[in-house]
Image (cartoon, rainbow, N blue to C red):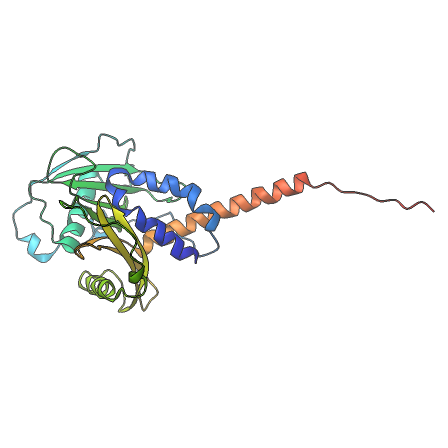
Length: 288
């Protein structure tokens, strides 16, 4: 149940990754901590190879013989983090993000503006990461069509990736109760996407309904694709035109759950201490 709650809240906030990833994790520290129970621990140390490039996702073979893609990369104006010597540089992180965008969306970044932000980690996501906000216009606005991603600052492993847009027409954003049971279309789309992009390191076992919401004026539905090895990839689609919007990886889920376990343990420890401090012992004497 806790796992489902985490995936639901994460899915509902997926669209803000590029513009403010840190906001979700800060809010989650309060919202989700009470639901945490024991799961698995995610290490925060790394075995870094002699050649850091081997840790990055390999580029597609056809890209090796193609001309270099020209796009602008710069630090986001709101960035406050500073990468360490162990972390990928801004340019390396942007290159890794570009490969993920190409693989998952088929996106060509020629002429794009890429705004990068570095975070040393948060209480609910204690892993250093880079986030990228990709647009085809220089100005960043909430209504801008954008692609965003969040990757491990050291290895380049993808945590989340998302596409958001502003629909040119007004469509209902209301919750569709029927989709709770009849979500077959989205389950098939999700399984197909997971297989095509090799998002799970095993054959796909099934897809399950997760939640509904909206991103801007675009109504969304989220399903969990579950592999035979137990991996879970959280995938979102538009309820308007069935467009694939984004995903959250199994690694990201595990990191969040592990952090929440720690927070819950600390809260329980403090509560127990407070109860002990507030306890009054009464001694009754019987006089004969």
